[in-house]
Image (tube, rainbow, N blue to C red):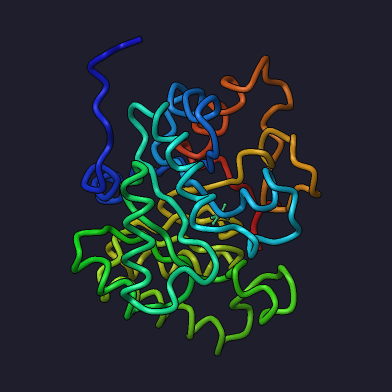
Length: 265
Ligand code: KIV
């Protein structure tokens, strides 16, 4: 293994947007997959609270604790060499800015380089950034608010909802977030947000015009226990193994071939 691999920083990720290079991202939850994803050249690994569904077998992300997240973040970071690692603050771990900072510190100590939180929580984002903790926002479909949303469905189809998501994206950036995940929004809305924001926008079910793409690892390897969502794709098809499937995903993202129209709204 090459010992001189340089770990990516948020500056490297931001520079990709500036030079128009698509950012490749996958979720990761353990050391073995982390090593393969890293070896395949994926830029960003997200230790997502989707682990509640794909690892723990729950039907939502709400059961995941900060202890779970720190455990999986530590495992992922032990095997990572180059990829930038973002870890999710799970449900109800950021009710106030101070509690958010205490919980974010657990993920940063486990090796994360950035934490992600859902919604336009500008109070928490501002406070975390003031403490030196980089933040990724997450707008559109918010899995931690699934009981309020009433189901996993596309957000921002109506003009007023689209306007709200765009306004919130600008607020999240203004509060100091350095990345934004947009989940399940119409492709034209995501494209517009990507154009208006200086920070990179990473899409999942948000069309091809985002600055980067993320998928849940188990969906794209077709090993999930839940139905693969329409916006995902089985990259194991035609691949000789896991690393080859991940390399194919990376190339498809970098070349703008994924997502195609059939994966978008
Ligand atoms: O938890 C997760 O995997 C996520 C992605 C869906 C973006 O937040």
